[in-house]
Structure formats: structure tokens, C-alpha cells
Image (cartoon, rainbow, N blue to C red; front, side, top):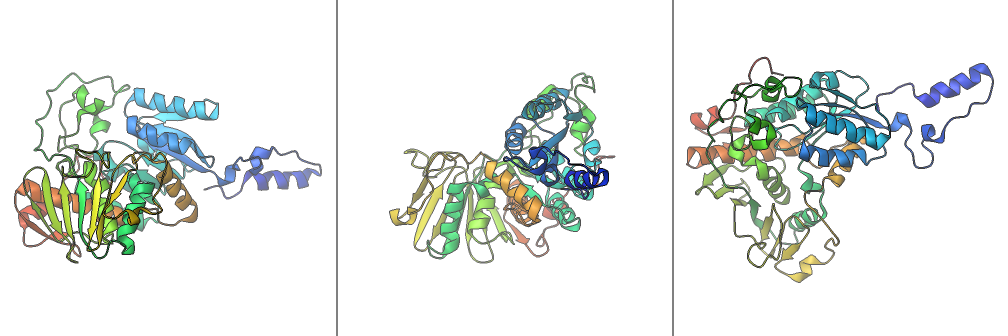
Length: 427
């Protein structure tokens, strides 16, 4: 993508210069199903663990992608990824390192996959955007409202293509349900329902343990912009969730980044947020849009429970004056009227599969268009998650202004919209 003087042009010029025929491999010209090097998207990875490897498999499967480098603070993880890439391409060329700035400093890399823990998503995206890289970043993409704003502003300022890992926007059953709501077939939408996980207070820090060899685990880089705290191997093994220092929004964006995002889409509210939030215990938050549409973020009560009509995680429900639709992972859809299901997608569908989401991103890298989960969509959906979490933490109704992206008349809530980054990890 970034090569201006292509190999094809070089070979053609050289052939004319020496006055003799040149035999060019078909793969170099994009024949026999191959993609010419000049048309490939060169990619690097930053922080690729178990979920990241599922995403990486989708990138590696694309013929127009060349994955060339991995940066990860854990040697075991970067070695797994290096082997994955080398097996895919039948060589030993994939480069591995600890410092992501090595990846961002390479001029041959067009785009990066950022699948670190939550604390690095926003800052990594900002630094990648400044370095001229397009970004596919896992969700939640930010720790605070302010970080969400910074991310979206940086992507726009530097003209990058950004895709949040909210892959359900490109999964057939969720797209079908959202289109039912957006098209008017359910009548005027009055309520949208998003599944959430139980809301829990901040966990106490884990006890300190001896620091590992930094060549194996670089604890300072693992922490990055997060507050400093003693090392414990459980953090790097994935037990950082539930600790507010590493898991923003009281954990609400963990699923809300998917389900509230889908509700925003169904309610034609991608350009805004609810204007108020009120928590009712640890399993229910209600919100309201300026349009009058009600948002219900809840743990239970979906069709998939009990009779399992719509099994699967991340269920959503959209209700209008003339009907409702509900769906979840695994592709099943329920509706108030069977006629609404005419044309519904069939076959095996998994809401956790990012293959179409990855393809959407790559197509937009080439076209410079906006992916389904672009920075504007991400900005409003994530801000709504963080604002709802702040209301829950405060234990009272909060009012929010989508235009200023601030709470109305609530200094305490507004102070919770940001947190300092630990030096020297900054944008």
C-alpha cells in the first residue's frame, strides 16, 4: 500500500534497459489468485494474546495481507505469533520485539492490529495514528470518556482508517435485527435493550511478587500508562479484569461496547449518546435519548433464558410500536411476528467470529472509506458506556450533554471522565 515504485515497474524498466525478455513470476503480477506485492497491506501486531490470535487468524487468511512483525511485552506470546506468521508464509521472516515503537517506526507497515489489554488500546491507537498507520483495535477501546475523545480526535486528525473490534456490526443476525429496527418494519422504536455483565466494585490489588526477567515479561511496559502497582503473575495471565486500573468503566464496556453499540445502531443514534442514566442495582441501568427512546442495560430477562429460544451471549432486543426482535450469538433470531423473519440469515453464525469485520477493515484501508465500527461510532458508543458506569458508581441519576460530552451540573461526575497517564507513557 505504501510502495510508490512497484516491483512490476522496476522489472519492466530493467527489461527495456538491457534489451532482453524478462520472465516474471505470476505471483509477482497477481496471477493465479495471488495478490501482487504492490497491492498487499503490510501489517504488524501489538499485544496479541488468545483473543488477539483469533483475530490474527482472520488477517492471515486474507490473500492481500502480509503480516511481518509482532511487538508484545511477553516473550511467550510474541513467539507464538511469530510462529503463526512463519507457518502461514512458509518462511522465518516475521520479526518480534518488545517495544511497539519499533513496529510503528517501520515505513513498510501500513496497518496494525492492537489487541493488548484495555489500558493500552487508546494510547496505542493514538501513537499508531500519529505514525501514519491504520488501526484495528480490540474493545473496549478506552478506559475513560476523555481517552475515547482523544482516540477519535487522533484518528480524524491524521486521516487514518480505524475499526474497533466490535465485530457484531458485521455479523449477519445482528445486522438483520438492526435493519429491522432501522427500516421502520418494527414501527417507531421506543426501547432498545443491551445485555451487560454484573457491575462490581474495584477489586483490591493482588499481592506483590518478585519481578520476572524483563526479557520474558516487561512489567513496566505491561503497565504502560496505568497506575503503578507491584507485579503479580495473575495480571499477565488475564486476571486484570475487575481491577479498575486496568479495566475501565467498572467493566461495563466489556459487553456494553458490543451490545450498547448495537442499540445505538438500531436506534439510529450513532452520532449521539443518551442524555441521562439511572442505575437500579448492580444488574440494571436505564437510559434515555433526547429522541425519547429508552435504553435498558440489563443482565437478565432475554428470550435466550429458560426456553433458550435465542441462545448465546451478548443478546440485544429492539422494540417498536408494531413489534420487536431479539437476537444473540450463535445466530438465532426471535420476533413478535414470524413475517418479520422472512429473509433472515441461515447457516452457522457466530457473533464472536471477526472474519467479516476484518475484511471490512481491509477493504476500507484500500478505499479510505469508513468501516462499520469507525471512530465516530466508537466515540459515541464508548462514551455512553463510560457515562452509564459513572452513574452506577455514583449511585444516582446523571444527566449528560452529547454536544459537549460532559455531565450537566455535576462536577463529581465530570472529574471521573479522565485519569492521568503514568509517565513516560503518554501521547
